[in-house]
Figure 1 (spheres, helix red, strand yellow):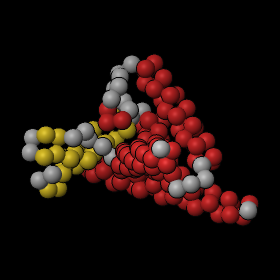
Figure 2: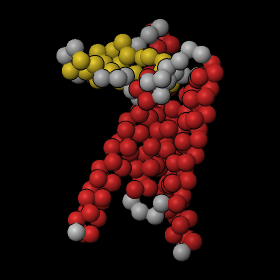
Figure 3: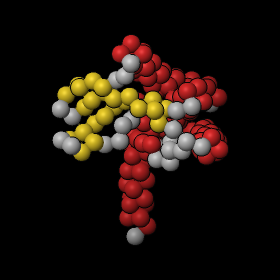
Length: 166
């Protein structure tokens, strides 16, 4: 039994490390391009540009503040939330753990940037015609996928449980 838990813990840690590494490699690549070219504004196709911005807020630039106190409070709140997600991962024994791992790995990537750069580099600019979505990064992709999957699972499981009760 403990061997199985140990194997699961190793696999979970490797998945978190993989997500964190993918995020770091993508950001380092973009930051190196920005250093060489003094900025990043690359046309990829009619729906995607690479455009580097520095995000001091949370999810897609929400709550961006120039004040150090607000930035530090948000960072502390993020650390607390990441710790709670870690506890949820440790206590989870079903497939939802993988969605939590997506959120955790992406959150660690963005937290690293907040602590190292005091901002998170975002660079994917998805757009349709003149409508531009928020600029985001690889960590944001994993966080969003994890959250969306958890929401769908909860909606489906709650609907299934409700139907079983009736």
